[in-house]
Image (cartoon, rainbow, N blue to C red):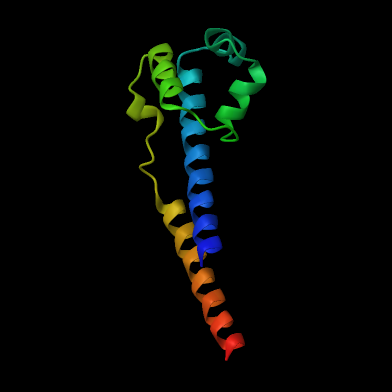
Length: 110
């Protein structure tokens, strides 16, 4: 069950990263900035900004604050995860799979 719980937590993290990355990209575009301009502000590569916007790389709270300053918005706007329907469906699917696996393990043991 521990592996399944870890998997569910990873899925939640991946989903949240994707949503936050999408918001960061949206606010960058609304600010009429290009990825290379943002990269220069952060002293990172354009590829690093792209990875954040795609949800591949996590954003630290310090980075979120800097993005908010740069984009003249609130940190909450960037980490807004109001639309949790997709996350809820994913969690329900993962939990159902975990229960099925647990039931299968009990059946195998008996």
